[in-house]
Image 1 (spheres, rainbow, N blue to C red):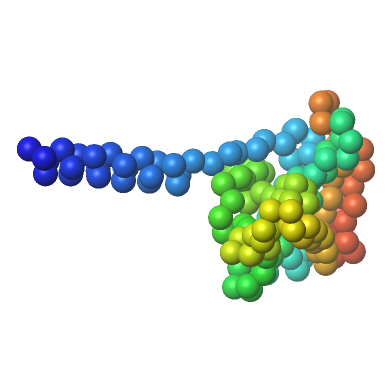
Image 2 (cartoon, helix red, strand yellow):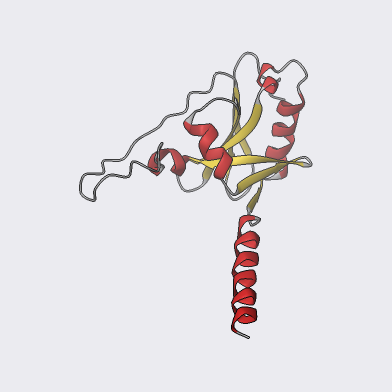
Length: 159
């Protein structure tokens, strides 16, 4: 009886752990923003497509957001590759989900979660991503109106 109860408890906790690993937060962009992002991703001569793409969601004040689409090397041992491998956030563009980081990840995230340090002596690490090939769309957070588009020379045409 005790063995059966123990087995059932272990199975229940094991299943609960697996279910939590499959949970994610899916972000959906305003249609106007998604259309431009999709056009950038589909650009055939885009050199960033040699690596995997990810998106960076940012905030510029209360009413304005940014979404940056850029690439990363999955084989490289970089902070961004590590964060992307363990994020549960993604953004839907067309029919594909892309991993998503936020500006807060770069303001408060630790590059190495093994090196937390002592309370009172944690000054934090500020990481500033500098993508070489990217497309950034600035848009209204409430109405979704595209305010500006910035992209590198190698990126897809803006409109």
